Length: 284
Image 1 (cartoon, rainbow, N blue to C red):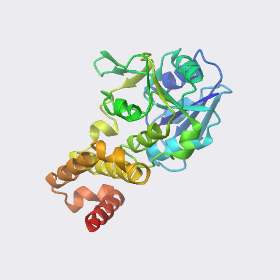
Image 2: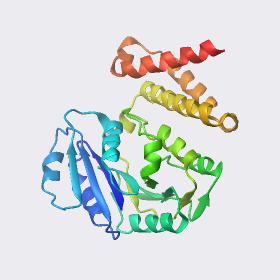
Image 3: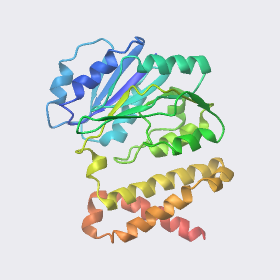
Image 4: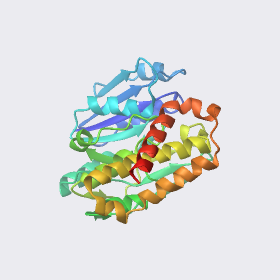
């Protein structure tokens, strides 16, 4: 079985298409789990109108963000493989079937398709690595070179989700998860199927984020990845540009000249960042 975990917050314009694309897959051994994150539009009403025995909708009591919502959906999943799907994206009919067949054929922990980027003007742009298998260090090196660093277009074995719990931050929450997963995976299979349609939504958190927010959360992401490899593989850490990326994030934060007003919305993340940074400086 494959579990498709959908996070939904204020996506009334797209949520029906999203859920129906998951339910309409040619691969029928699926369950669809929607985590509804206290939308203020009609998202919840639309979900209540969709009747299918394979669909489960979990309603959050408070708005907890995409990261914590995905974690809740993953923990409720029963499938051998899990695919994450955002509520404003959708899948082509054969996407799950092709990825699952590759997973079985190669006994792979992760199978990645490409993506079709849907721009606001209606233009579509595809991106994939074709058909190939990545093992060893290439599992991470190939992913790091993707045009869009993305987790949602991948079937990932549930055992990896148990090994690497999903990050509960509200921004840049997938990269510190997928990198350790790629490291632990036995192999990563890529297919040229670009059946994941990723909508470039100008109202999304990514597009609305300030330079300070981007720099802060990227720094936390880099810190997570560095901490992981310090425990798992120092040799690989030295060969990858994670430390350089961390330094660039710190420089970007300084260039923003943070004020109490800028920091206030991200107080917890700012404290986490400063504590970890001071800890690293104290080690030198």
